[in-house]
Image 1 (tube, rainbow, N blue to C red):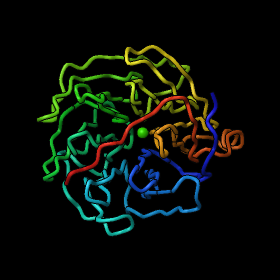
Image 2: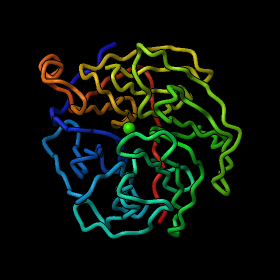
Image 3: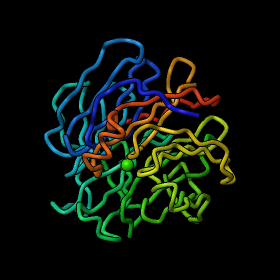
Image 4: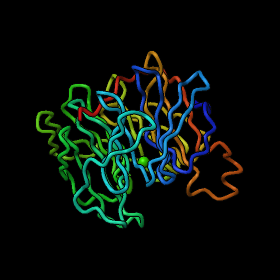
Length: 289
Ligand code: CA
């Protein structure tokens, strides 16, 4: 199966798609450009807002607006395009680190992790931002904190630390937002690329974007490979389900790390791609703060 280019945005590091099922917008970030994009699929409505520093991820707030994982910490915007207000720093913040991928859980908390600009092993961590603004470091020794999602029943959290080349799963205790009992559910073979962002569908299947792999792979909840979606952008970064029926898989991509020759061969790198893979997603969590 092949994904189609739907928006030729040529992002340097397009990442973190988020579907707003209330208003019909697709959001995503261009991390190093410090920019949050949104687009109403099927229309010409497209906007961007600047974050003034690298933005690893953005998520919707329950009451409107956005919560963001900036290089320096967490910030909120009352609405798209309005000024970002700092909300909380994270322990260990430094100019050598930045926040990376993030997502909201079903209880309205925003989770985002960090990485070193030089990819130093173990320099990153995973953090949980509670609605009241408290930040908790929930996992240490992370190298490139990346995709995550929660099972529909709220008992498991899936997580990718990219250089491990695995998708891991934790037992998730939703009331305190605690994770425990880490184990590996998927191992990505070297020739397939590096696991980056991910999403679960309504049946609990695991859709993993592959940096350097030009593809999104779908695995059963048990970790069996079921489908490969080809993407005409080698640096495939992340994916989410959206559209009126949650049956469209939107896929982000990047131009970073590609040579002139590679870009000539994959000119739409950095664009947004989409496919109807015969699966459905579900509404993403929203930040309750
Ligand atoms: Ca990523």
